[in-house]
Image (cartoon, rainbow, N blue to C red; front, top):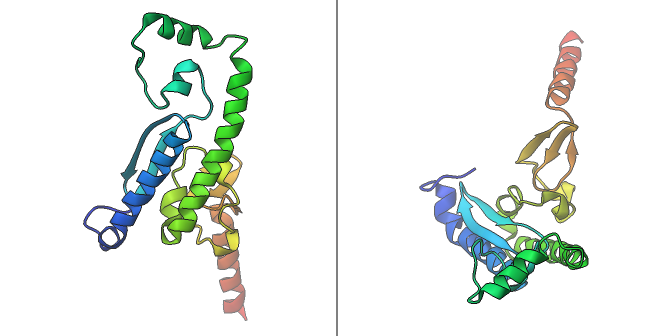
Length: 179
């Protein structure tokens, strides 16, 4: 979307860095396993999974390597992965993390409304963020092509196929020219 050295980056780059840091650190504070957070091409990138897969995710969210001093704790953590008794914990944590994820992104959009597109367009869990921005206030500047059609990456609105709007405009011009 944007490149370093652009006028946009000079004007909003510091705000974008603040938004990235806010989202990443707030999710980590709420024990959501964030693997990485950064700015890339002028957009917010927060790589996260929702829910705790095993004990290590709960005690050390976002760490991809062993953080325990004692082997027995690590073995217990590994046994929790896929265990029948861990499944309810994983389901509950996933439901809680979904709400936290939506709330944190919503707060970021309210704090930096001028960066709405940059914050929402590359989110990992875009389907959870639908409705944060009203389609009436969205410019539909970042469009995702789907098998089922086109979708705005910011507000989640379903958009008409690319050819349809062009065809209707062309037909309208032809009818005006014929008259």
